[in-house]
Image (cartoon, rainbow, N blue to C red; front, side, top):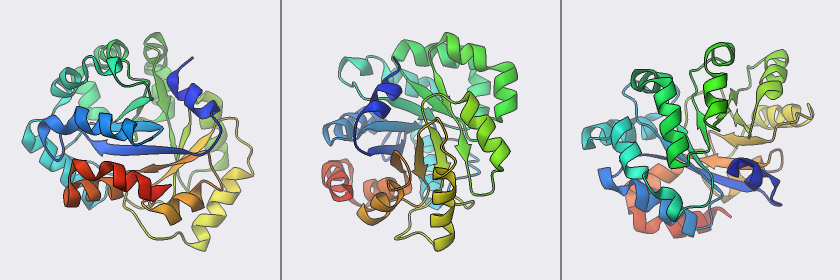
Length: 253
């Protein structure tokens, strides 16, 4: 069984943390993963930096720019992650845009993920139909889950299609805007959470975009299996460094 499925079957609400590989410093990637696991995080999304991140807010964009300047790229990330499964047992997901994966070679990329022990990918700009027609078999051969995103404007028919093809979880984007943490959610967003919850999808949902503190975490887990925190975690890294990880995670739940 995929580690993501095992984690999703556990009781309680899940906390997944996104960070940009190679940020704040090039060699921080593995240390951050270790510290996150030690802090009790349920899943980790390792961001593959890209020069033109369409859906990312300024915090993640800045971290991507810095990581690229630090020398982070796909080959460096794979080198850093060699042997990671000797010490890390929680699910590891790589999140990134399709262009760097395509440049590396999709099949080659998936094989490397399988060798290292990556459990899945989140590729925001890879359309589900294109994935199904061209890459689904490659992902399956390499035991990789591909998690899809839904947003407030996603049509019910599309959501049902995503649910029918999904493994692992559906990444439920809390708003149609770019990433970034907030202190609370609007009534419109809460209604969106409730609407999707009532659809009784077979695939668990984890909500991201706008989650960054205890209040927003507790709000979204009322309507989902868990929450994803990215911008707020990266901002904390920027302000307080990697030694603050345990205290930050402890403040969330």
